[in-house]
Amino acid sequence: MNPCHRFLRFAVIAAAASLVAACASSSAPPPVAAPAAPQFTSPITAQQVVGKWGLAAYHRPEDASRTEAQARQGCRQPYVISAGPSGGFMMYLADQSQPSEVVSKQILPGPTYIGLPDEPPGAETDREVVRFDGQVMVLKWVDPEVAGRYGTMVYVRCP
Image 1 (spheres, one colour):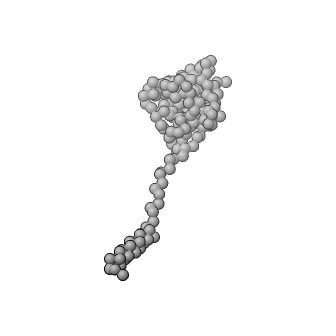
Image 2 (cartoon, one colour):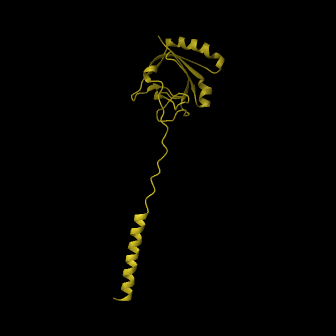
Image 3 (cartoon, helix red, strand yellow):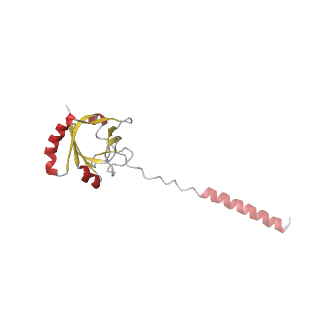
């Protein structure tokens, strides 16, 4: 056999052996899993908020009790919260002319928020639940600019 052919054969066998050895000894690194988004709970159900509500708002904490009384008077022209098509409830977001489906959301042990279901709790478009007992619901906008314009919203369930 020609020395060039023998050298070429040896080189091919050596290259093949290296590839086989490399494939056998190297394992692909495990896929890097994206960090799981924290799951939030919905402590306030749609059934608890669907209905007619009197609505008023305040900017100063000392006006809270007076505003609750004004919200009761708002039942003459109630704010209606209806059930949403996907299990949430329909409310207006800031500066929107059409209601959006929202949910209550919370990552324990944090505060409860009401906002869009595809955003994390505490998103800029959310409202923080300051108080909820089934008859009175007090919500404060997360976005400071919106909170400055709309104030803290007081909803009182209409009879």
